[in-house]
Structure formats: structure tokens, C-alpha cells
Image (tube, rainbow, N blue to C red):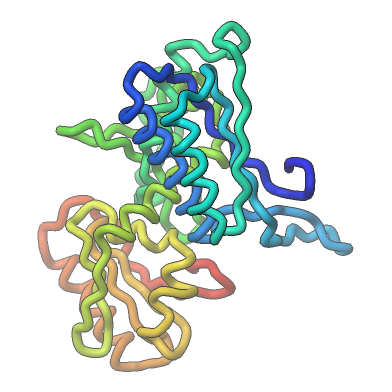
Length: 292
């Protein structure tokens, strides 16, 4: 938490300004990631109430860019534009400049942070997460970072390497000096950007299917703003959803017998076919902002 009661999000800017356009592009991408997290409701202030229960508060946010090199004119102009653009988010932007000798960031840490910063949250079945001893990973450091949702699914974090996806492993977090909660927030924010660019909702009978080009459809279950805001118009009652495979997400009204029957048919069709990357055959319902 920063001064003035704001949540402080920090961007480390270790690049010099030899290529101004590329530098600005990198900064814009990092800012977009944070703004997507703010817009999607992923940034909260956690506190305890009188009964000791954890509660979430919407708190003003400040983004601070910590730079290793002074800002040239192009950088200053970019900052002025950004400050004006993000005013609508209620976000305050500040900057600090440290000489390179004072910035304790190694090349390995820079590479690890760049890698983790590109990760996208991705759902897997919980049965796909064996213990380290049973998995064949040499050490815990080599195991993928996973978050159990306690509903038959776990969250992993994928990085697109061009011709394949690579999982974020614990040694990546250690090298980047990033904790699991920060990793999750960044990856969900990247997933929100993916959904904004690709997700389409298609009506089919009494239910709705989400189309997004494969890979991440089911993972959109993680995006609270889609269910609480953007897609709320499609269903009058509580949500029910099925994700039998990573590229299959269908949902409908939990109180509609016709919708429930059609969602079960989606699961049956997936089970009868040869589908890669199976998830779960259970029907999930959204209760108090969680899928159960």
C-alpha cells in the first residue's frame, strides 16, 4: 500500500532509450497489463473485518514506473499522454529514476520477469497435478506453478514461445523474485486481454457457447468481470457452465431445465469424441462469485 491509501503497482523499467519507439511500446504493454487487471476487478485491498474474516475493498490505485535511465523528451511526452489517458480509471501515475548502479536487477532476473510477464492463466484438471515425487520432476523448482480452485480444476500459467507453450515453473518465480499471488494476478490480467481481443459468445438453443480460437475458452471461467458484468445479460438466473475440454466453454441459466439438459449434452458429446486436453465432466455453478 502506498501513501494516501492507494494500492501501489510498480513497473521496473531497466531499458535505455537507444530505441525510443521500442521502449515506449514495451512500457505501453506493461501498463496495459495492469490496467486490464484493474478494469477486470483483479486488484483489491484485502483486510479483516471485526470477526476476522478476509474482505475485499475497492481501493484507489497508483502505478509507479521505476526507471534506470532518465526520461528523454519522447518519454516525457509519452508519460503526459498516459497520465491523461488513465485518469478515467482513477489511477495515479508516478515515476522515479535510479542510476543503473543503484538498480539491483541482473540480466537473469530481467529475462525471468519478461518470461513471467507474458504468462496467461490456463485451466487444467486437478488430477493432472501429481506430487513432485510422483511427477518425475527432479526438484520442486522444476514443477509447474499451480493454484488449486477446489472444484476439480487448477490454474497453470502458460507462456507462448512461438511454436509451443511453456509452463511457468517455480524456478522462474525464484529467478524473477515474483510470488505466486503476483504471478496469478499478472496471468489473469493477460487472460483478460486475450478475452477482450478474441472472445465471442454464440447463442445455440437455450445455452451459449464461447468461441475464441482454441486453447483458452475454458480458462475464461477465471475472469470475474465477464460473468458479473459483460455476460450477465445472457442469463437471467444463476450461471451454470461446462468445460469438458480446454477449448469448450458453454453456459446457461442454472434454473432452466432446458439449458441444463443441453449443457449435459455438451459434456456427453465431448465424452463420446476424441478430444485433446480434456478437463472435467462436472457441471459447475457460480455461487458468491466462485465456480463450484
